[in-house]
Image 1 (cartoon, rainbow, N blue to C red):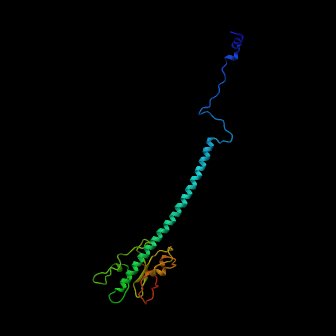
Image 2 (image 1 turned 135 degrees about the horizontal axis):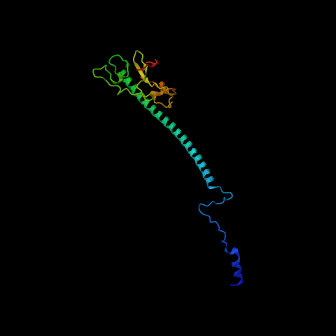
Image 3 (image 1 turned 60 degrees about the vertical axis):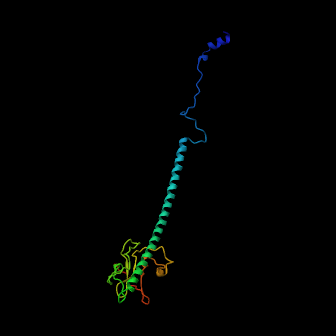
Length: 204
């Protein structure tokens, strides 16, 4: 053993363990990097943006549903108007048939049921298949236009709503042009040469 080796063995620092260098593990805290947000802060920010985006989507869906509801409502009302015009025409034709086929003097019907079953003949006549319901009120309680000399010469809806259709009517319904309420849509029959009835309508 030379002198150098004896010196190392006699040195107390020779037998000390070298300092341990910590190894960065998965759970070891990492020193923050300047200019980079921590994961928790990034998650909070991401959650805030997600919530805001969700609120925007909900708002857009609400506007879309409202617009769809309005369009659906208008479409449903237009369909009811078409139905009302058809049914009103059926009533008008039935009243004309009842009047013109009167045995003897021409008279108007007294009630709606007279159009369904005309008992003035040995064999009852049918000018109307049934008393149709009013598509605007879902009722058979029609307003009735009084006829000169008694009875009624027309019907109309009791709905006070404003029509969507205000123009481009067929010739028999041309008087409905610009009407403000459905009560102004009177489906009446008046023989040529006689003035139209203007008496207030009564119930059935």
